[in-house]
Length: 424
Image (cartoon, rainbow, N blue to C red; front, side, top):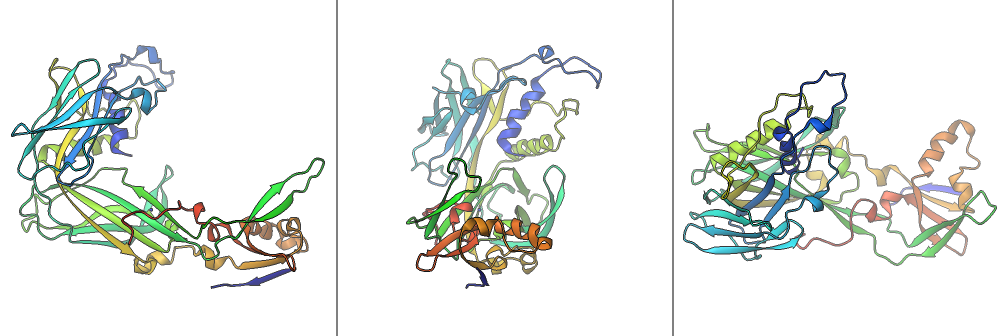
C-alpha cells in the first residue's frame, strides 16, 4: 500500500601546458591528410607555477616539464622532482621551499612577504640546471568592499547551452595605494543538510536462479545529515583600474554558478582573494587569456610561446614557461542563505526535497520499484520517478518503509562529511 504526504561549492595551468604547441614545428599538410606526429620536433621545457603574497601561509611552487604532443604523460611523470628552491628578498633574506610530493614545493606556513620588499625565485633542478626570476615588488592590495550576485544566463559546455544561474561580482572602492592591476581567485562551499537523514541502509542481493532482487534493510548508524561541497577557481580573472580616474573597481565579474548547484543547498559561502600584481604580470596573464580564446586547432594562428619572468642562468636562450608572481593579497568571505540570491535565480532552482513527496510503502520493495498496480498510461513516468527513491526509515512492526529522493536522505550524494574549519 502506497501513501503520499509532504513532510517538513579553460585554466591557467592547462594553458601553460598548451603553450608547448607553440614550441612545435610541423610540415605543411593538406587538411584531409592524417597528421604525422613524427614530423614534430619536441623541446623539453621547464614549466614554473609559483606565487607568494603577504598572507602568512604555505606558499607553493609547482615544477613540471612539457611532454610530447603525442605523449600520454600524467602530472607525476612530468614532475620536476628533487629540485632546490628558495626565495630571496632584496635584502638577501632567504626562505627555502621543501618538496611535499612530486613537483610540489612548499614554504613554511608562517612565511609572508613584506609590502615594499622585492623578491626573486631561484631554482636548481635535480640535473643541476639553474634558473632565476626577475625581482618582483610586493604591493599592498586594497580591501574588497563588497561581494554580491545577480541573475544571469550564460552559454556553458561545448554546445554553449544557455544556462540560468547566479553571477558573483565584487566592488573595490579605493585602490589609490596599490598597483591598479589585479588577479582574482575564489573558493566556495555549499552546505548540504538533508531533511530525512537515513536510518536504514538497503542491501540488494540476487540469489542464484532468481531474476528479482531481494532487498535487505539494516540499521544505518552514520550521520549523513550534513555535508559540505567545496570548489575553487580554475580560470584567470583579471581587472585593472588604470583607465579609471577615481581609482575604483565596480562590478568585476568573478564567478558564475549554475542555478542547479543550489538544489539542496542550505547555506552557501564564497571567498574572493584579490591579488595586486605588476603590470608585467598583468600583461603575461592577458596573453594567457588570448591563447585560451583559440579554439585549440593545430592550424590556428599561434600567438607564440608565452614566456614569463624566469630565465635560465646557464643558457639565456633556453625557453622557460610560467611566472613567479609576487602580490599583495586581500580576501573577503560572505555567507548566504539561498533566499539571499537574486530572486530571479530562485525561479530556476529545482527544489528537489519539496517536489518529491515522502512515500510510505507496505510490502515487498520489488513491487514498489516495478510500480505494480499503476495504470499502464502512467507506468513509464512512475517507473522513472520511483528510481530516484530510497528507503530512509523502516517500521518493522507493520512492515512500513519510508522512502524519499536519494538527494534528500544522504548528504554524501552532494558533498562530503566534515565541516571546514572556517565555516561559521
